[in-house]
Length: 317
Image (tube, rainbow, N blue to C red):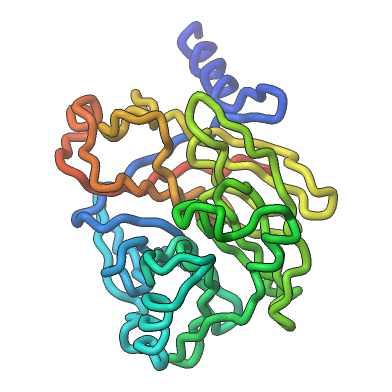
């Protein structure tokens, strides 16, 4: 009887609300079999897709699940698309925000509407569209939007750019996460490729580094925003322009997520977010850092593999 009471108490505490914040119920962790870094997730039916943020990662990849590990295969090879070579040259050689030195491919976010995939390329602040085997850059005037909001692009680090993307397909509205400095959501009308709004959010520093955004998921008038350094998913009400709920994903089984990799830094590593009706998927971009000794002992895996974290999605979140 006493044991059952303790189990019930533990279940209640796992979803205990601290004001707006709740703690996600951890389900499992899957380690990659390769050293690819995962920077953006998208769930297409039963297929979990991702992009990577290195120059060599010019593809959309599909996750292949195993019991405790996963591997991947190419879903769409960007190098084989029409306009790839032209885009590569322009992104490499043309100035963006006053800078000549930057990566032409730094893919950080992925979403889909109908037959078109949309990807964000961080350092050059481009939205790429893939449809009918054609790669194109959406002609969106981000430079003037940033300038009007008091943040000239040439004064912002190329490593503090677009980190996530999601879409309200019904209304043809694209949402882009500007990581930090400024931390913002950019709302784009896909019918006109015009920025409808850029709403800024709190941009303070914390003990874990800057507040930041690293991926987005749209559903029914809400944006779910991945906050890497705070280990949070925030549910943002797009009508009332405010965060209405927060879910912490910091707790793993017998391990704190901050202890998963041996980085020596307080910064978070979560960069991809996808959600189904009952599951939350979060990808960890470990920047080739090795698993911690504690994690190696707990999971029986050693090396510098990236990982996928799976959580039970709470009802109403």
